Amino acid sequence: MTAHHEPTPRPPHQVLDGTDIARVVTRIAHEIVERAKGAEDVVLLGIHTRGVHLARRLHGRLAQITGREIPLGTLDITMYRDDLRLKPARALEHTEIPPGGIDGKLVILVDDVLFSGRTIRAALDALNDIGRPRAVQLAVLVDRGHRELPIRADYVGKNLPTSLREAVQVRLSDSDGVDAVLVGDRDFTARSSQAMAAKPSEPHLPE
Image (tube, rainbow, N blue to C red):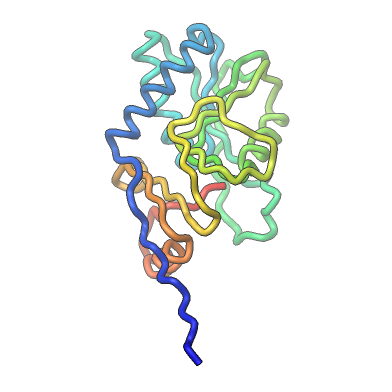
């Protein structure tokens, strides 16, 4: 009998580099200004962790474009996740709301990867406990598809068709030392993560 061999997991390959990511951030900033009529009542909220880094970059681009400081905050959605009991405990991050709050404002949530939509659902629940914005929009670096909830992004850096066996890794210089987006087989990524568990700043698998 011929032994059945599983296909060798495919290592990650790069789909965006630092130049691509910078270009995407600039484009999204211009789209926000255009769609939000100058972004006068916009509040940016970055979802921990890499969404915070991207929100800070968007904040800088918006300041260059508009000549104004757009309110910037951070959002920790850990306690609002519907898989909280299924995953290992993780440290809580800091939620920081700008002094003017979010009531009556156009809040733009910023995250790195849009996948199942469950992270964004948790973010919306967290917002509910903070205030009542006039509208909420979503900006993401990558939309990889496979939604499990009726959620879509208003601003997308790159639509990236993937299979469920693939993992999307976002690396940003703020936390990982380099800007890149990589796609590879989830099994390969899992094995690599286990092998490098002792190293800090591992790329996460967003949802």
